[in-house]
Amino acid sequence: MAAGKNAAAALDAWLVFEDEAGFSMTPPSVRTWAPRGSTPIVRVRGRTTRRVSIAALTCYRPGHRSRLIWRPYRHNRTRSGRKSFAWTDYRDLLIAAHRQLDGPIIVIWDNLNTHLTDGMRRFAAACDWLTIYQLPAYAPDLNPVEGIWSLLRRGRLTNRIITDPDHLMQIIRNDLHRIQYHPHLLDGCLTATGLTLKRS
Image (cartoon, rainbow, N blue to C red; front, side):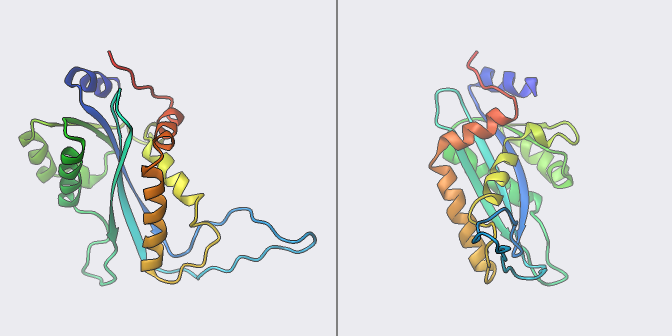
């Protein structure tokens, strides 16, 4: 991790953390209110295979507003369809981030097989604006994107009847847009990891 921070400072680059998570139409449940003496009942849909995946980037650079960039992936219900992002989806996300951030980026992500494909390695080697580091195994506590998932699961998804995948996507999109416009939430996700970002 220190290598990634040092490289970001040396290149005056954005330090970008990536992670992905899946959300189903069965919402997370949390404590809720009810009249005294009455047990609260929250009605939700039963188990369903219909899911939405989100790949997100939290982007940090000293002297700049923290940024959140994300892309959705709706699972194909057919047996032959992919159930997760392909390496080309991550490639396109990184290209979009480079354009939006307008500078070199240092990407830090986990050891997901899709991150380690030959295609991704060749793509990274061909881009002079991109450097990639892998997080240590089983170290989600070092990734601020985990804080984004926590905010989503404690937001408007909780205790909610979700009618269909479009409704699910609408809720996620609205909450992610809200987070995008509140950089202090992104900064808080970084702080929760125990990592700091300083200009050397």
